[in-house]
Length: 319
Image: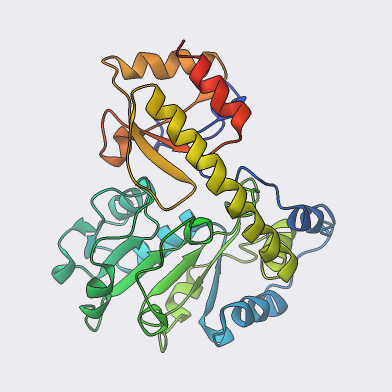
């Protein structure tokens, strides 16, 4: 049994039409792809990642001391959970499974926000793609000794609405960033976090292995900071908005109930009794959807927004 449920390729290989992941379907970003292809994999990266950390700090307008690198978002989730070993964690009602997996691995019990040492938030959330309920109030209520991590995996893929936190509140939380989704290059594993203002990052840095990010990950994060990649991303969001409207309309034509979302994905509830069997049938036809039961939403699926050809294939599979 796998420890966590994920979308994307599986034992059957790469799906022809993969709705199960939230990667930017307009990708890969050509500027980031070129940077990754040109990376020098014959040498170690700088073990201190001096230039990369400065670029990330400049990109976010923060002091370089607040930047923390991680091999992936999941690696960071485990590291910061390890620092709170044996204490309490507060999880969103619906959330990425690695939060709970890491909590169990490090002996964190699930408690309410008032009694947790580690608190998780994600906006836009997964799987719903919505605002985190009461996030600003949650940040305002953080006490000394508590750590709140805001998972920003889908912030660059927000298609409408506005963030719940202003700059002052962002300075009070950990911001976890994984640009590979926005750039359409999820096969490159690299992430980073911006620490709260005044936080001591040394305990977390001490848990990091040497060279947590390889040459290709460094190239990806450096490309993320460049104007050309950000311009491409902005243009891709316009395309995704149109695709999303079309995809929702097609799902509704099948009788599915689509839940609101501000991101490049959404959840839907199909009117089917044996959904598990239907998912298996679709997978054999090259179409993969994400069963949202692992998120606490049985009877729902999460669909990443894909181009019209993929959408049409999904509709035809039900006719």
